[in-house]
Amino acid sequence: MFNLAGNQLTSLAENNFAIKKVCLSTALVLGGLLLSACATFDENTQPEVKKLVVLHTNDHHGRFWHNEHGEYGMAARKTLLDKLRAQAKDNDQEVILLSGGDINTGIPESDMQQAEPDFRGMALLGYDAMAIGNHEFDNPVSVLAKQQEWAGFPFLSANIIDNASNEHAYQASTVITKGDIKIGLVGLTTTDTKVIGNPEYIGHLSFTKPSTAAKIAIDEMNKTQQVDITIAVTHMGHFVDAKHGINAPGDVTLARELPAGMLDVIIGGHSQEPVCMLDENDSDNNYQAGSACQPDKQNNTWIMQAHEWGKYVGKAEFEIINGEVTLTSYQLIPVNLTQMQRLANGQYKRSFIGEELKKSPEVYNFLLPYQQKGGAEILVAFATVNGLLNGHRTQIRNRQTNLGKLIATAQMQKVHADFGIISSGGIRNSIESGEVNYKQVLSVHPFKNRLTYVDMMGKDVEQYLMTVAAFPPDSGAFAQFSGVSFQVKDNQVSHILIKGQPIDNNRSYRFSLNSYNAAGGDGYPKLLDHKGFVATSYIDAEVLKEFLQSNSPLNVNEYQPNGEINRQ
Ligand SMILES: [Zn+2]
Image 1 (tube, rainbow, N blue to C red):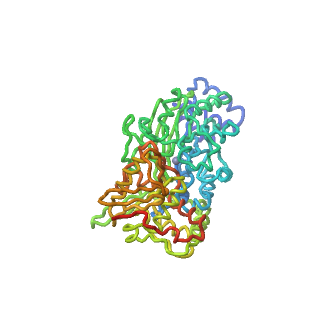
Image 2: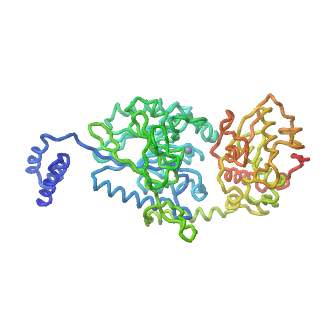
Image 3: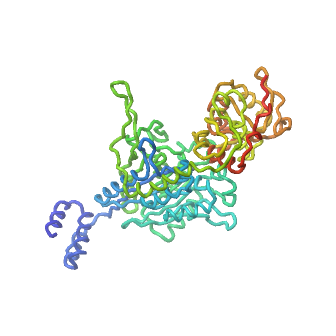
């Protein structure tokens, strides 16, 4: 032991910090004599260097299991995290693991179990805290409370206020100590949650201005605690140069609105992208997995985001000297992502980018029963129908069908719209007579489009219908309707009735459609910038399931088109 210590002392002679550490650990073993000897070394000690590794993910969206190509998944992520923690230990670094939120919604196996495998999995992986994302409100708040228990680490948001008490609905901030490093954490949630969330679940909550809420929470924290580094875990999106368009302001706006130096790092989510910059306010939109990534920096605050689904673990290494925080390295580490390579014979082969991470047996075996249970639940019947709901490609792309009308009705009702539109390309299968399970629903709506709606004046509705009704049969664009009737002749639309009443040019109407069509898919007019446009967080398959379930046993004849759309 003496020998070892002696060797270390010689090799580290130029590094006072390391000497001090060696002395202290030796002193613990050998007692007072060495302690006093070390005091001499401490005389001209340089400022203490604290080293912290921040590991982060975001927008997990139900991906506790790997996909069919073996990409991502929490079992492989655990192996990577173990490796990174071991490396950090060797480098005298402390480690904190954070999430930018949106754990919920996206994969039926997870959704049907209220993301229990995901949250329990995060606990196994050692997450320290996360931001509350908008999708955390896809279920009643009682489910979120249950998820908080499964996770066991804090869910943070400083800008969600309970209207009844006028107080924070969730924990605003926390201080986590790792070794000798005190890390101040504050959480923030996009104010768009109010717009895109389900009013049933969030009607009692207000979402306040993030920078104001953050400043109050950080000031509050600093009153009682001396932290070494201040980090915001956020779920608000990264919008380059703060150009957030119709979205609520995101991380860049937050960094710019706070006093410089108040916030050292933002670990973000929501926009689901690797935040990698080419230059100031110029993001790398073609970021390739495995290549270098320069995070954004605004007003002295680093902004980081690790794409989505656990595809990457972000790794930021900091040195803290006298309260001065310096980023010394940053990496987005792919978790078993693959690429297609063209072989000499012209064929394509899929291979892992970098070395394949073996799945942690501990996490794999923990998650497997959930995966099996979720898989089985997809096959459980939840409704019955008394005839065929026709989504056959050659039918639904040529005429109105009962399934087209039913889906447009379901979507319309979900967002309290006056009428509903869906392109036939968004309906990929029929539902046969008899029992219905979620697997069948997913075969009708495999794309997980979000439900959107727009409030539009009658005269503009007429124009919109003119465009949409003109899409020819035998195409994915061919539209299915509910709640509206009209005649089409020579590409002109006339006799428009909405809910049985003639259309009024001067009143506003709401219609539902999916995010794909709203974004211009199938050549539909783009609505994303329309001032009355709202993208909800409802997924088309979920909306259809809910509708079938609540109308079961369902009489298919009630959805039989009745000449509402009269093409001459
Ligand atoms: Zn989100």
